[in-house]
Length: 118
Image (cartoon, rainbow, N blue to C red):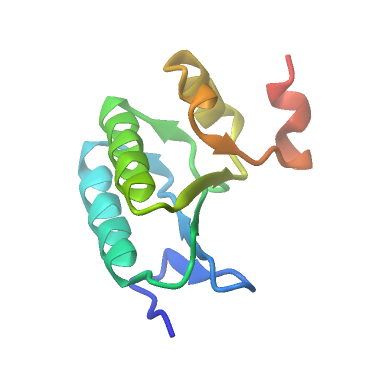
């Protein structure tokens, strides 16, 4: 069985790793976030999906964007699909401005549907 690496990670009902993004994905938090995700990837031999849960994220800077892109490349190189879940309106703006909304698979939640459909 897959071991969890931090309090910000858990397994979904089907053993899919779910990683909770920090409130602010900045230079400092990006380093820790990337290390945690890398460790999770090294241990993940069962699942072909990884979920990033944005529910508490309110800010992403350029370092955070770079970390998401690096993580995307690492995940895809292992044949794993990366899904962004519960993307907040603030995070969605950054993803749209950087055109990453066209690259990432984003689960649209009902909670934020009206905020991002404009």
